[in-house]
Image 1 (tube, helix red, strand yellow):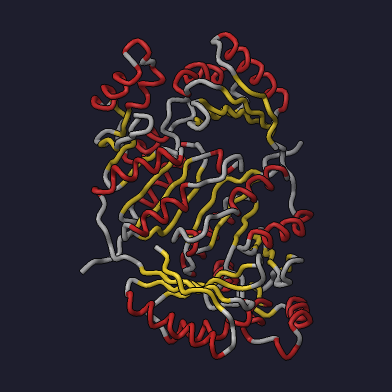
Image 2 (tube, rainbow over the protein chains, first blue to last red):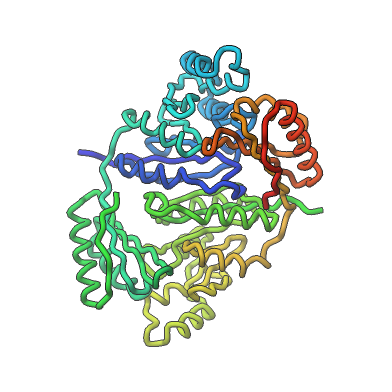
Length: 250
Length: 250
């Protein structure tokens, strides 16, 4: 029987913490992992400071089945992820022959500068994750996957590493959009949650296009989700709350 | 002389970790704090689980000058932030008279259900943060600010609590968009960083509209930013790299 498989994410990036860049990797990775039957349990966003990266990586890689990192693997001086994760594992950062060969072929020997060679370094023992977009690879070491911060490169790397991941139980999700203030739904939702202990019921209010709430029901048990949704729709009918859905969310 | 003032953020939300919702609060708060002279140092995204919220809140509130939380303060059963932060402080969650009065006036006594009354609870000792959008207040306890997860409510609450925050040194930021592959810039940027130790130089590659990098120079010392930018522009001229900017970022 399938079990729960968990993951953490460390986003390495001064640019996220300064507000300069809107992160897009958290929601992409969360959705992608969910489809893979892996539950993202925690995210930490840390600055480009080795001690902070080491602490976050060591806290999460020991706690979850997988740890992903994004950012800091380029050629510039502020790209310190490889050195930091090597430090987290207590191993040196070393040149990876295959990565070196790929990058040298891509840039040409005479243009393969020391800065570009930095992108061929891995924590000792690390394996390559392919980067079809811009060659410089990601890295897998133990249960940690070191990915690029640029969203389209990060997304491409995920496709390459997919076969390396175990899948856990898929979490089934259905949602219903209810056109009534959340505070009118609260008592009924609380009762519904008590009755259907095998599902998780979340309520997310909105204030655009009128006032309402999206109610999301999640469980690894598909039938339990359907049963709770049927009761939720009955609750709406009894109270004359109009609703849209239910819709399935992957 | 102004000193550095730091902040952490705990995003409380299963909906972020499942990928259902794209977080918008991290970048908004980061930018807003930066303008207030406060540096966001770390973000954690945790699930709607009391033990996880308590651990993250206690780790960050003791480490940074301020801690902000978003999410989980509505009327429904999955809104457990107030109870969790009360637990983090080792105090009970109690009804706040002023919050109770405001909410009762808003809903009317006969519609002021137990679920709605939940939104008047605070960790004992907590003060209210105004919510002009939907009345239910945020909370300030010690150095922790408990805010709504809905972006427009979170943003309105920030304006109310602004006078409570000390300002630190503003961090000045200038950026230059350079139309050359980051790996061609890396050696020059490394030298520039060594020469200008008083600024932080970040390089963020892009692959849309051609290949290039946005180089961001940051420091509390405005003159140091200008000096480093002048050298960066000279570096571009010497190497015939075209560039756009510099532009100031707030």
